[in-house]
Image 1 (spheres, rainbow, N blue to C red):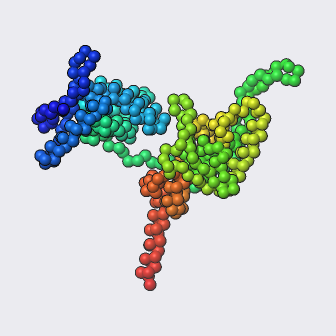
Image 2 (cartoon, one colour; image 1 turned 45 degrees about the vertical axis):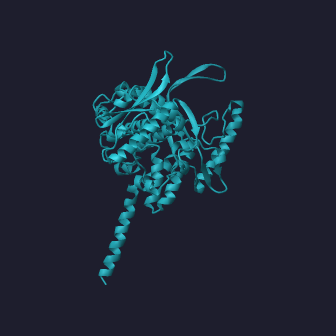
Length: 442
């Protein structure tokens, strides 16, 4: 039978939970604070409900005492019972790092039930101060980063309330630094996209440092520095074409197998994704159901895929037993294993660097021509942004674009790529102006 003691505006509920090995009675207690907006009858009903559920959880061994457990203790339990069971490995890694490096050093020692909105507000404010960054750079963390930490903590404290360890979630009343407007999305214009595709076919000079060689007789000789031409490897050219024309994510493309390519129907089947977690590459199902999708590709991309497939088979046979790849991946390392998800990014940045360096060194181009042919420094994800932006700016319906991107709702697509609609909005304005002006002139 639970013992209920009124303390001011709250109630302390104590339940006997057997005896320990010394014969001492074990008691578990919890605090219930009724909603002041409720009537007295409603508060009484809510209290009785809480008492029954609390007593049942204690008897069934499901109760953990938030007044005895620290934030650190609960965080470990939350990671084990929820995060590591329900969330993606990449998210598990992020949450574990955030807790260990950012959150627990600040509030890990506090009793879980004693954490207040003020504790969290103070934590967030300290993260904005100089010295809060882990990379040694000046200044504090951005509001966007702190908002992500707040979302994680809110999820953790929500679990504590669902597991009846806490009565309420302190994150709900904490003050979080205001998030600035969304960072501007970087992408190629249609002209820049064409320049980029052309850059994949260019040859670039590479300086080979002087070194020693061995002639046919076995005699060594010295070779001076020299310049040779290099071109972009075919598989990277194919990768970038697929990225630009499909709008798929990096991990989705790098995990493609040849079984996912339907040459007859011009389709690629996006059914998995790859990511690096603690230095280990993991291939898993996409995060959401809508991320599983089939995307139609144009003939130019399929032609490149066929060419890449042919060369890969020839190379595979030449490598013999050294080819250890499993999964028949489209994009591979030298030995057939799936390409590391970070590799395309590095190569993409290298292409931009080589192209811009070549343009700047071309004395035959005027200053204006150089400016027009230089490519902006965007991220590899910018090819996905470019694909979506160009489609929307050419009046492709948002639902189709959302399906290609794997967004659950077209509204998500429109929210991210609202900038792409400016061209359509201007065209709509010009159309109305032309239409109404013409009618007024009659």
